[in-house]
Each structure stands twice: as structure tokens, then as C-alpha cells.
Length: 157
Image (tube, rainbow, N blue to C red):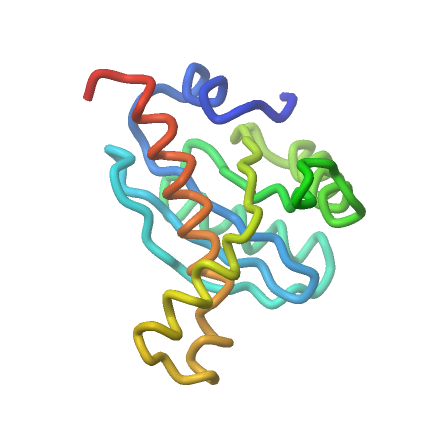
């Protein structure tokens, strides 16, 4: 299946069921999940990147454990909206992942998601060590929440 916009993914998987949010970094992958009604996103874990097969195995295991019906993956666009090397790398990751699962993927603009979560954690007086530990999963939650908020606007809920 080809990667779609979030609204198209919802037309495929329906209006309910957990979605996994992914913040794909060069060293880690932040993971978040939303409730089956898709109202709130919650950080789940941070996966330390090793190699693709191990990374996708961990992601698919989490998707299975959480009964996920779709993935929302942050697309790291440049500030002008263009795609650079990181966006191309994210697209390549998804192209390879799609060969291993029938669960659909959708991209969501992740510009400034990590910075927004960093500011929020600083405002909450979170220690530097704790921020480093949680930042990627918090960014995944921020990405997923943005997508589900956008999706919900399209429905009379």
C-alpha cells in the first residue's frame, strides 16, 4: 500500500482504533499511541536505532501489542516546506516498512515538534537528563496529537 495523507488513512482504517505516532530520528525513534477513540496521544517509548530490521521489528511489535490500525510518522520538512535529506530518509524508511506490514502509514509535518516539546519540558522544570530520555517520545506524541486533532476536525464527533 502507498503512504497516504492522514484523512486517506482514516478512510482505509475507519474512525476508531489506536494509531501509533513515530518521530524518526537518526539515533532514536520516539513512539506514541492514541486511544481507540483518537482523542489523546500518549508517549510510549524511545527505541534506540540499530539497523532497519531490528528497528521495524520493534515498531511492529509495539503496533501489534497496541492493536494499532495505522501509523502517523513525522515528516521533517525544511522551514520553507521543501524536503531535504532527512525527509528523504524518512520516506525511504517508510517505503521499506510498507513491504513488511499491511498497516498503513501517513506522514505529518513535524517541523518544530522536538523544539516545542523541549520548551514545554523546560517550562515544567524537567532536568536535562530526563528531557534527553523523554524528548523523542514526547515529540512523537506531539506529532500524533496534531494529526488526530486534524483528523477529528473532519468528522462530527
